[in-house]
Image (tube, helix red, strand yellow):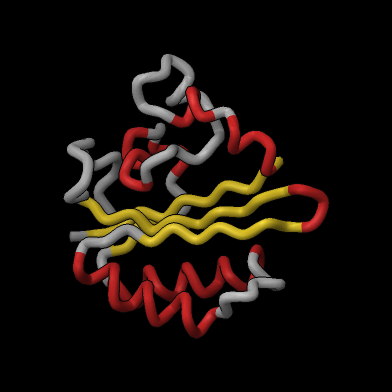
Length: 127
């Protein structure tokens, strides 16, 4: 197993455009919006991959770095998020963090397991 990292920051209102966030939409591949299901990130163009990892520790380091950049006012806290991610990723469970930002913006960082046990998308890029 390996992991692909994805990141999106945009208007929180855009998250309501659910049609283009579904793989059966003709707009899905070209939409910058995060998919409705975490594993569907793997169906996005490979250019959307922020990073890929073969070691879980590297994947966790990337998530922690994103937390420091995008989730500074996070009420959940890095420790809780990292503990959950360290448990989930080795077991093949995707990790998706999201947080509202000032001005109605929203940030999301995802670490998606590949192969994915919830969707059958082919690997977009071998690490």
